[in-house]
Amino acid sequence: MNSSPHILIVEDESIVAFNLQQRLSHMGYHVPDVAVSGVETLALVAQCRPDLILMDIHIEGAMDGIDVAARIHESHPVPVIYLTAYSEDSTLERARKTRPYGYLIKPFSERELHATIQMALERHTVEKALAASQLLLEQALDAARMGTVELDATTGDIQLSSGSVTMLGNHCDRAITLTSFLASVDEADRQGMATQMDASAKPPHKFSQEFRVNPEGQETRWIKFDASPMTGNRLSGIVQDITERKNAEIRLRLLNDSLEQLVTERTAELRQTLRELETFTFSAAHDLRAPIRSIAGLSAVMVEDYAEGLGEKGSRLMSSMGSAAVRMGELIDALLEMSRLSRTTMVLAEVDISQLASELAASMMEAEPQRRAVVQVAPGLKALADLVLVRSVLDNLMRNAWKYSGKKSVTQIEVGSYNQDGRDVFFVRDEGCGFDMKMADRLFEPFNRLHSQTEFSGTGIGLSTVKRIVARHGGRVWTSSIPVEGATFFFTLQA
Image 1 (cartoon, one colour):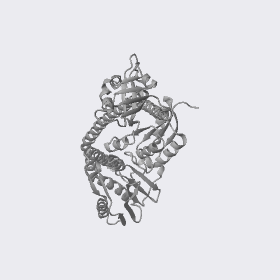
Image 2 (spheres, rainbow, N blue to C red; image 1 turned 135 degrees about the vertical axis):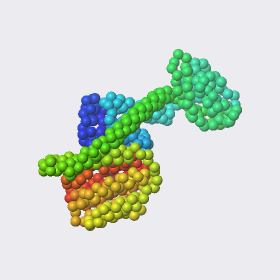
Image 3 (spheres, one colour; image 1 turned 45 degrees about the vertical axis):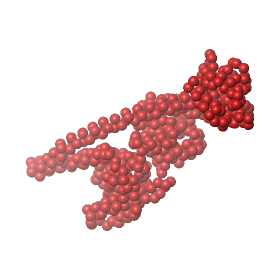
Image 4 (spheres, helix red, strand yellow; image 1 turned 180 degrees about the vertical axis):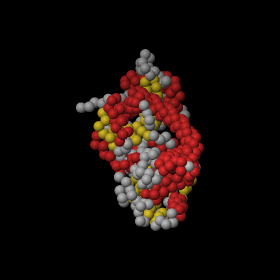
């Protein structure tokens, strides 16, 4: 039997999942299972009960990783560590509500991965030990009196059982005064106990109090006192040693603090790196625009004014160079636009998605009046989101639907929504050329295109921009398609 911890990987990118599986196996962990969707994850958890789950937030299916972790937390208490390339505050807030055992921002080092897993496993072990200890204590209280304290509030006399004397470290007679009893309590907790037990302020009453004692020559012990009033102005209570539980709580709190600190530091580092990378990308792309445009313009001038000297072959080569320069200029403009949308501050308000979609549809049909097109936009589509960013999402998705339906006799596009688990899921559907779902993962990565430039023009940036904007809103985007029959793109906005 394999005694190493069993780790379940939930990652819908096969290359990333395979790399992660290899790294974990190299560290000595048992990693037999990889899930790509929420449904598959829940089935594997119920079947094999892993010791820990590495959960990517953005996975296949209607549920994202946070939704799946919440479901697991309700049914199977398995530690979950989130993996993600995004660090938006809305996403972090949703993730924290599921009480994760860690949060790793991609890319992360092998050292960070190993340390986070070890801390999570240790924390889970402590939590299980704490739960078991509490159960045993409750059973002990039901079965037998561990130690008793009886106070006569009128005289201030206290009777201790032998077990109480041992726990309190009081080596005098079992009959003592309230003053002597309070003297055995740690100074930091003494006033609280005195307030509860002093009958001069209020009559004996039911209470539960935890306090420390410092027996001579022994370590500090934690005691819990559960008291109830009795007839004759008396108070009777049961005392129990809860030192192990309190130490476990302290240990757990230190582990939680360490995990929170690790998450905070790693998130701050990632945000700084992302800011530096976006600044570099924006600056580099901006500085390239002028020379690229110069190459394109000069190529056109050469072909137009010096065609005779260039000859047929030279003119053809010069035209190809100009076309390539124009293409590069389009890519640079697309990169700048994506960088701008990523850097802009979101302004949340109620956005009329139906109106935006209708305006975009009218603009596309006006640009190509000769095309037969039917664009259906469901009424009343609204969301709390950033107007500019949501317009960019719809523009990219609807123009893609328009473009890839261009070879159909009639362009059919539908914009609508449906409710799933209390959330609005918006979609843009077309009856265009479609694509093989095996290639779907590539669609949302920059510069990845499923069609050649001669077949369908484009930059390969649009869907990557959509994914980034939707993620900034705390939502997710996915797709469904059948070749030749069309494609549907779904997205949620959780802002």
